[in-house]
Amino acid sequence: THFGYETVSEAEKATRVYKVFENVAQKYDVMNDAMSLGIHRLWKDKLLHIMQPQPGAQLLDVAGGTGDISFRFLEYIRSQQDRRKRQAAQSMQALSWQDIPDNYSTENENGPRDSRAVVCDINKEMLKVGKQKADSMGIRAGLSWVVGDAEELPFDDDQFDIYTIAFGIRNVTRIDQALQEALRVLKPGGRFMCLEFSKVKNPVLARLYDAYSFQMIPVLGEVIAGDWKSYQYLVESIRRFPDQEEFKHMIEDTGFCCVQYHNFTGGVVALHSGFKL
Ligand code: SAM
Image (cartoon, rainbow, N blue to C red; front, side, top):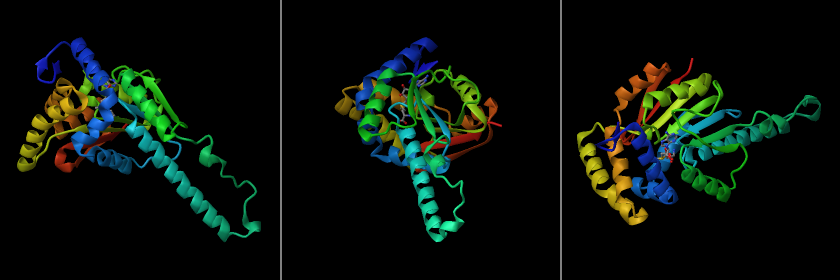
């Protein structure tokens, strides 16, 4: 297999990827903002906008790192619940007391139907930074952190409504194995969503993007995180990842249905999604 453009054994790739994220964990969020000029936040927001999770949904966020997708998921659900409560309160005001049904309750809003987000990542350091971030943001309810490999998930079959993997799948050694695992842990009807760097189609934008990523990202890595090599790997791993159509076929070959993708920022990033029947 490959580590960037180097040919290495599968075990060697896994070890090196682990070291990359162990090294960058403390600076990961700062670097994400610096490298993408903050645009990664918009891509992640768009993922949630397309996902539109409903209260009660169970999310597994694989290669979840410092938790960005799970935080957004829980925030989205909370805002949905708040909106429903406001609507319920408004319609209650419109009713006279005699009209209120005996069994009316808002308990379900926060009770057993509550959503859950599980952040699963192979790297303890990334999860540690994520947990600290969650604490500082005051996010606790409905969130758990699990060390686990995307290729061999530590979960039973048919557990989750949504599986996400954001900027993670290109780091996995056997992508087909990770896709099989995604299919296994999703409930029938569950949705797979993958956000990943992809291929820019517009030749002018492609040249600008190439120049920026090859020349600037390792420099930013060195200046901000003192780590040129890890960021050089990240750029090279992006170049090696299959393009939109090829990745779509890989997802279909795994057994997902209704597979489609959306390009963000001209294809710098693509969101692939599909359903388990
Ligand atoms: N999803 C987060 C985000 O969007 O900010 C983090 C993405 S970060 C670029 C990639 C993550 O993939 C790292 O946290 C790394 O530890 C994790 N990773 C790499 N190989 C993995 C594997 N085989 N199983 C689970 N996580 C893995």
